[in-house]
Length: 295
Ligand code: AMP
Ligand code: ZN
Ligand code: FE
Ligand code: FE
Image 1: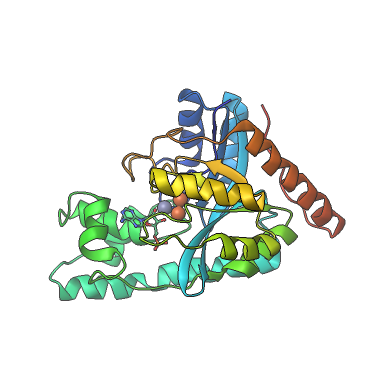
Image 2: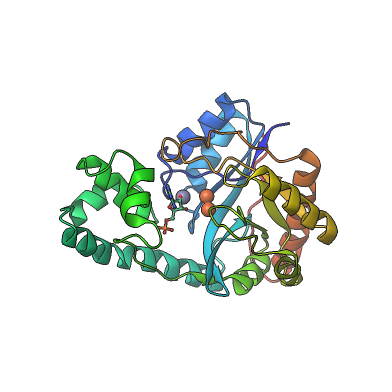
């Protein structure tokens, strides 16, 4: 069983339409795929249709942009009812914040002598519900200002770089609760990725677990060997589920090929069990969380 629980499609900042992502996962020999676009369930329907077509197990999820103690944290939310109004409200705020900062970023780029327009970004963001920095990066590539997305982040768009603009992010503990109320389960994405610090650590993760967190993504390209070992030990101490995934973005991220990291089947079973319990409680309150799509 090969299980990849974190991937992006064109519904956010991946480069493949959701159906193509699912077909590529089946072609790559995966048995289970989760589609987890940033802050949106927009790709779910197309992904579901393709999953039936190619006979792969599909987990519908999303990666929510949250903040905790002033720091950005990505939260994987699996199988929540995407129509739960308080969740919709938080996701809308994030999506609006993403969109609203684009003109500021373009102005900063302009001040640096780089002329890209709203239309350039809109072209790069065609098909997405979540216009973000990766699309501004693609527009920069299209005009030849940089060679690829990574260079765009390193030179202009990353935190602390001259065209960086902050945006709204949903409060982490509250989002964990909302996803649970919506019948879903949550896993902190790449908790120690792209940062020099080992944060959130065991005390913070224990607190989040008390708020309803089910697991942590340990096997991820942005984690060093040492980080993975330490995170696995924390998960064992707290009895959190351990996941592994590619964080595939099509051709938008190098070294994140489908299945490059995978989740242990036993850990996946625990996560699905937790989701079934959350879904049952949510259904009793009138929510309609989705099921895992099984071939
Ligand atoms: P946003 O949420 O709009 O700020 O965009 C964040 C997304 O940009 C992340 O989820 C990544 O997919 C991508 N990203 C962030 N940093 C980098 C980087 N240094 N290189 C390439 N992509 C990045
Ligand atoms: Zn992304
Ligand atoms: Fe992420
Ligand atoms: Fe991601």
